[in-house]
Image (cartoon, rainbow, N blue to C red; front, side, top):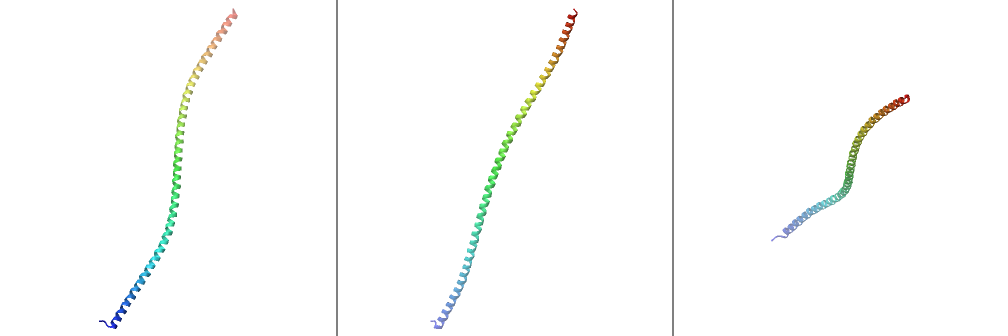
Length: 144
């Protein structure tokens, strides 16, 4: 059987132990409160960062869409230029063929002109000869 003093000492020791545990728990509680406050602050910073990144994402997406539109416009311009180049090339080919045709016609006309000039010279020579013969005949006739 424990004496009153032993029981008192035991109760004091238990009370001291409880006080020590309470002090430890208060320290842990304080640490947890500090950790919670740090987490709330970090959460706030992360929410700000998420907002910033979200805005940056919108800007980048807008830039990307604009660049896609510009690229599509450029591709369309290239296609239009290729079509115009093909048309110009065809027109050039057509003109070359027309030029070749005109050269052939020019050569034919030059040949015909040469023949006509030759015929004219023959005709002119024949006319001279006919006039000469006519003059000779007229001279002979006037002498008779």
